[in-house]
Amino acid sequence: MADDKKLTTREADFSAWYNEVVLRAELADYSPVRGCMVIRPNGYGIWERMQRALDDMFKATGHQNAYFPLFIPESFLHKEAEHVEGFAPETAVVTHGGGKKLEEPLIVRPTSETIIYSMFAKWVQSYRDLPLLINQWANVVRWEMRTRLFLRTLEFLWQEGHTAHASHDEAEEEARRMLGVYSDFMEGWMAMPVITGQKTNAEKFAGALRTYSCEALMQDNKALQAGTSHNLGQNFAKAFDLKFQAEHGGQEFAWNTSWGVSTRLVGGLVMTHGDDVGVRIPPLLAPIEVVIVPIYKSDDERSRMLDAADAIVRRLEDWERRDPGRLRVKIDDRDGIKPGAKYYEWELRGVPLRMELGPRDLEKNQAVLVRRDTREKRPVSLDAMGEDIADLLMRIQEDMLIAARDRREQNSIRHKISYDDFKELMEGKGAFVYAGWCGSPDCEREIKEETKATIRVLPDEEFRSAEAPATCLKCGREATAEAVWARAY
Ligand SMILES: [Zn+2]
Image (cartoon, rainbow, N blue to C red; front, side, top):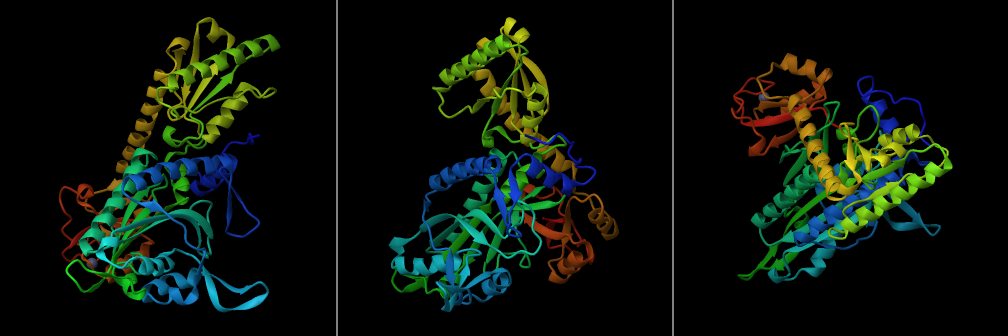
């Protein structure tokens, strides 16, 4: 049963609100292991739907799933210099097994480039073996000091795509394609708008040639890096001797990409759509899309309402046969809990649509539908069930994206801003700030030290301002690129 105490509001303390929502909507819980979380069925149900959608998209773009070991020989991590520098500080290392000290310690994977490309080197001989397009669903471990449920935990679930190609251009195209898959998923399924673009050298993945990212703006105006895609160049191929016989003869090193999204997306979903009542889940990802709450006083009314609710579900199922798996409906038939308490609980959990069904509704051959996103109520005829509800769910899905995009744009600064005002903004309300950058890593580092804001991306063309900024936000010299700045999770 949900706790009746009101949630802390987002306005009062966004971070406290987030933790309370995640715990009380029973998405996740703290675990006996510091920094690790337990994903509860309500949260896992969302992740499962995310996985299914993404997996279909990966397969539609030619990828196959495979599985590689949890452990990586320590020496593997050292073969790519930038990679080890980036990941060594946060690895968990196994030194003993079966009561004996291991000859070579094993790293619990923080990411699997090294072990996967060592296998690719075995499998790829000729250009005919390329491209090799593999995805792995797995858990990874990064020894983080400060953790937050879903957003940053020692162990998390994710997928990591790993591919090998015959040329730089093919790898670049792949890295870009998968960034597009992520951005389509985030907007189409999560109703979470993102801006895409390239990371600066300071922010790119350890060992990559170039990193691309999808960045979303949360309701506290901090950015969430929601998914990344890397063109790894030949760095790992050289480290693991991943060579192939080229079409025109001679041995060449392959070109790799890797790309990943994680259970962090569940946190992003909460911080994008949640309100002071609880979570709001976009219908496509909601484990339950419609909950029917029967309203009754006497036993006789109870059995009549439950019969009517069953009939509605059957009608929806009949309708659904034309489009299987489309509607996920639940009747909340728990006795001894008042309808108001049920409403409260389902709103907290973010079910997109609630159907209230009482004796007076039934007399009028109707039920009352309440949207979770807008909390708008309206009667619906019992004869029009099916298509009507499916349409309304699609509308909710679209409206949630529009609302999230409007909010992001209202909190994006595209006009010229002085560095002092920028500093004040980053310390206060926060925003996505589109500003000029001279390309100097010093300006980038100084801004980060002084404001905690980082360049989220050098945005792709469709996100750039109509008029390119002329000068660097920090030093005032000529800008060589437009950059999107924000504090980030
Ligand atoms: Zn500068």
